[in-house]
Every structure is written in C-alpha cells, then in structure tokens.
Image (cartoon, rainbow, N blue to C red):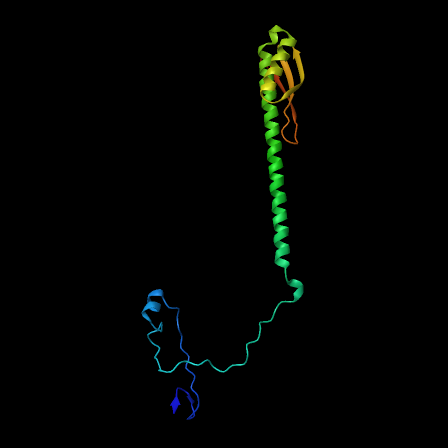
Length: 174
C-alpha cells in the first residue's frame, strides 16, 4: 500500500496526526468533535507517535538566577530616591514662597503705618507676619521706607527673606 511519497509496509502501524482545536462550550455540550473541516475521521483513535523521552530545555548558568530581582530592587530604590528629592525640592520652594509672601505683606503693613512711629510700624509688621505663620526677624524704618526680614519655617526648611516697602523712588533727571 502506498501513500504519498513513501511506502508503508503491510502490517505496520500507521500513525494518524489530527489537529484538534479547543472546543467551544456549545460544542462541548453538543458532543462536537472540534475538528477542522478538511480533516477526515479515520474511525480509529489517534495514537501518539513513539518518541524518545523529552529532554528538559537547557538552563542558564546558576549565577544568573535572580539577577532580574536585583535589578528590579535597584531601579525601585533609584526611583524612590528621585521621588524623595523632588518632594524635598518642592517643599523648599513652598517654604521660600511662604517666607517671601509673609515678608512682602509685613513690609506693606509697616509702610502703611510708618507715620505712627517705628514701633507702631514694626508692631503692624509682626501682626501680619504672625497671621501668615511667620516671624519677623528684622524691622528697620527709615523715613517712609520700611525694610522687613521674615522667616517662615516649613518642614526642615526655614528661609528668611527681606522685603522693602515705601513710596517710589524719584526718577533721576536725564
């Protein structure tokens, strides 16, 4: 008996390979075969071909095992450090802005009350700075110009900024 290109001897066991796709739930309940239309049913159960026992795939050397975990930990540590640095930088910027706002408002309050004397002007600056969660570290009244230094601690940062308020300076003649 000949089949295809090769010859099969009489009495030899014929191996039939059939592709079977996964059954859909409806086919499984209906007892469907799950075969492709171009595959014929021979009437006999397919037998697995006789093969040598399967060999395990070659493994990487033992020194490489777990190296992805080490790299993952290193990357996570770097990301946490960068994120922490960004948070600290943001907190420093917020502290500087709070101190600048407190110094500006305190200087404006002191400049508004300079006519009542330097003590009254500096007392007004202190009241405004305390309302801004800051403290005045320096207050100098020179005529109508007031210079206030305020410190606003935020977290580990306590920047001190100086602000000046008063009438505009006269323009120089050209």
